[in-house]
Image 1 (cartoon, rainbow, N blue to C red):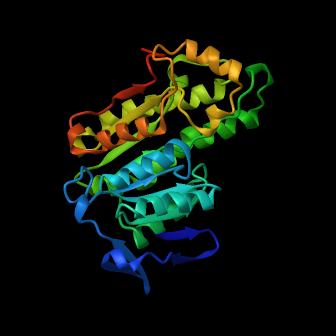
Image 2 (image 1 turned 180 degrees about the vertical axis):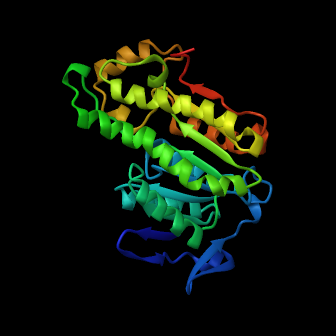
Length: 288
């Protein structure tokens, strides 16, 4: 795994050479690629993906599943370095080449720096998964401009920053895919989440418009709108509130991060080559 961090020398983690079948060189460093023969018939063999917010939750599941299906995966994170390393190790265990980079995607200059390092050490990407997101929840009458701006800057501006910065990679790819992770809240709204709902609804509009613009370039642009998923965020919900939420879900359970990841793989694969501008709801029937 290659990791790059601001102010830190690029370096490569030692990987078990017993399973190594090839050796790559990065500016004098060596990255050992694990045995990939079992991935030759996988859906995403030979593709390169970038997943933002990949250190935990849905992003973690997406990165690991992309690797299982043969993709090499670049993983962006903002603060959870140790967790990002563990995700990369899991991905390497199935034969993927991985790369991690700390960047705040709400800052365009940091995304541009990330791109320069991606090109230098990882190569050009075919798949962009805009997953990173935050929430700062409160009733609108108590919401200040800072709380509004922070959520919009990460959830919506961050997707713009990454998409606009890496668009030239996707235009050069024969398999360009943009997959945006929005939310059920962006579709139906939610009390105390006006800023979050606005950011996720904006991402839906961005998905549909960009799909029309890029279709002639053979780039598909789709979004996934998860409902309530078993992540750290949902685990913090009080039990009584969870019961009320579950009562609104026809399937009477929360979703799993892996179920979102499976959908990402499908949209990233050739199986979905004629699907674009679609918002895929994965919510157990909570919003139809």
